[in-house]
Image 1: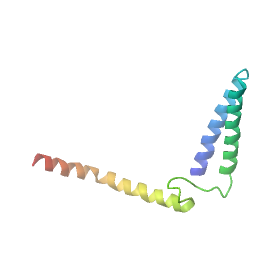
Image 2: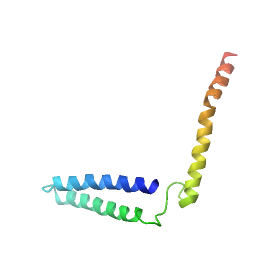
Image 3: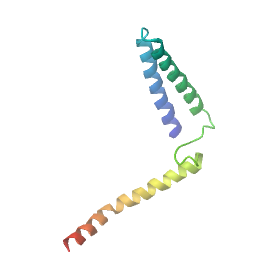
Image 4: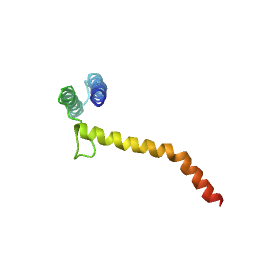
Length: 99
């Protein structure tokens, strides 16, 4: 899913920059160069993201790949547990305030 999302988002950004570049042929050379650099960076990102060995990277930067995915699965599962407990927490807090 991460890889698909990266490719989809980069593709959308690439399309937007390409349209901007095409619509601004009379724009200053610096602006056109800026757009062209963005297009080149997105093309490189899409090339990397489409490879079989594409590494999943993120935060924390000390992890990547399956280790990073497992870390975030555990983190969000713990967060979900806390959210599920929230009604009981509010109920207990209300009882304390009323006392």
